[in-house]
Image (cartoon, rainbow, N blue to C red; front, side):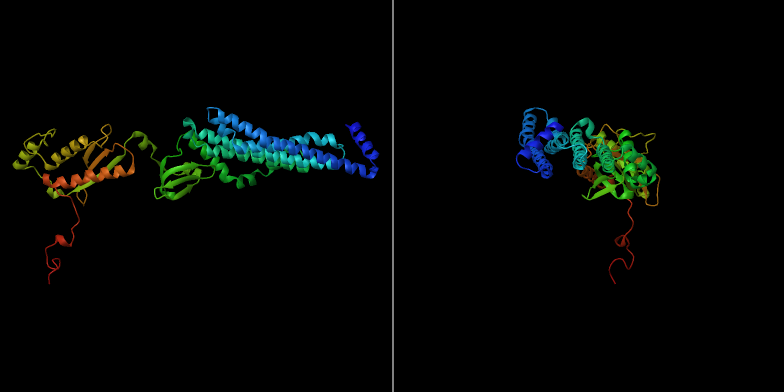
Length: 400
């Protein structure tokens, strides 16, 4: 290499360039030549290599290569070619003892580290997009894991850049960081807690994107949009967005409705308060009417006296079992609860045949409208607090 440099310097002297100026002319020519080679390599990568790879990926039937080798990843690969060429050609053009060589190599090394870190982050983003498309991985909270890997890559890149600037081994930087571990843990507290919480949520299958969760403490009631390293985004039913720290889902209690969606039925648990003064034995006329309509089938009778509420409970159970929008494979029950000052609660416990909200509300309304309409047929009344119209005394009739 030194022989080639001396040959070039003698050639410059033969052209009339003074010895004091020949070295600067040589450096200029070398830098221009290297710059032209780098420019040519960059043009070849942009206009030959990248279009060729895109054409190959488009011709394949699989879609994973289109996601993995996207435009951003290919551009980052193209950006990596110039520093590699510079690292190969610069030592050939300059003497190792020259300060200019050390400066150029140091700047080139820093640029190469930055490009490699960006390339790895882009590659991780492509892997995340690819994993989301797989049904087996779509339900797992992987975004926080990929974000943590990106942070690790960036931290390693920063350590390497600092070691290049101060001409120290990266292990020296790690030793210095170990001494300030308490400060680093304080700075990255949320990230560390988020990472640990994300691992626990994924390992225990407590939360998935798309789950409906309720967490009143944070005002969250809706579908999980995404689980990241520091936040869990929940879109509420009013289309507002609530953000929850991942570690709060571990330390606090929340309700996940995934089991309800997977079961295919949504529970209805509502009560009708019966006026206890209307509960009585059925009259002979009522017994004849109920028997004619078939409402006494399945009614247990130890004697000839039957309570109207008993017949009504039996009627409601048969009504629910024959309803086409009630899930017949799940619990159907009509039961009495503890009497209260507002009457006797008669609870209807059943499940709808779907989990969508609007049909679920329509089913509840339809059934309870029927309950309120059929109650008087059994001689029963719904308890209702008295209003002014219920009083016949003076002062309530509107007359003076």
